[in-house]
Length: 266
DNA sequence: CGGGCGGCCTGGAGGC
DNA sequence: TGCCTCCAGGCCGCCC
Image (cartoon, rainbow, N blue to C red; front, side, top):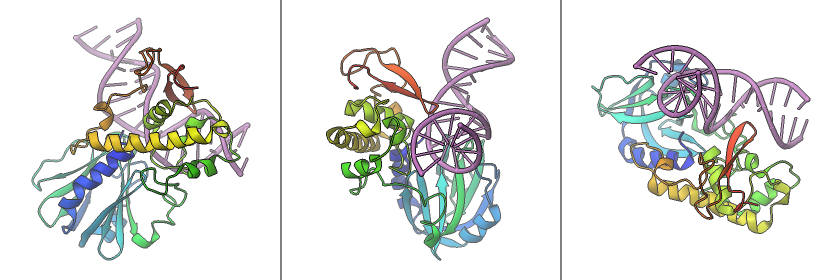
């Protein structure tokens, strides 16, 4: 379950190895992902082009190629994107392989198939339906308390689903949301409309800190940072809150588990 | 219109 | 011990 910071770690770890190499050939072994891979379009756009830069938007990894084309990868729940020697045997659930001029291969495997893989002209990214509606990046300077305030204005409903709304701020998944609310001392069921400016500022900071903390801890093997950073509340129902010792509670919001400390979060 | 829920998918955990 | 059910997650589409 890669969250945004882990995609950023992945981007940084792959970039020095990929930039300057060339995609010779794209092999689609299993096109069944959340959206079926269009092997022909992917090949047409990517094959024979050099890798120029790696970027990230929300949880999408963007591989810019020369000639104005971009390969878009989303890891969904269980995706892994790894660089391997050309002779390495295929792995289970290997969906696609980018054969590189250097002889290595970049491969995508995704057992649960929640991921995405496609290519499109770089200039068309912003208007593409996958990207057009996305909100601000939580780890960039543009993410201020004011952004949350503006998005919250006139809105109803609990704050936790609000934080997970990608049109507001991208990359805040279920774990991330529970942890940020705990750090900020805000009850997940509290109405967005009733969050004070001070709480919003703390929340913004908690989201940002969660991101940077996880960045520091996630390793280059693509292992989740969440299992290396001790979680304050997530998946800890009945266990003591790290801050005050009160038993952590679980509730379901919008069909998703939320964990919180009834004492620290009001 | 905007909030919220179902469904996609499979590995792993838990129950009997 | 082994099977079977159930649940997790990101994200879109549809419902109310």
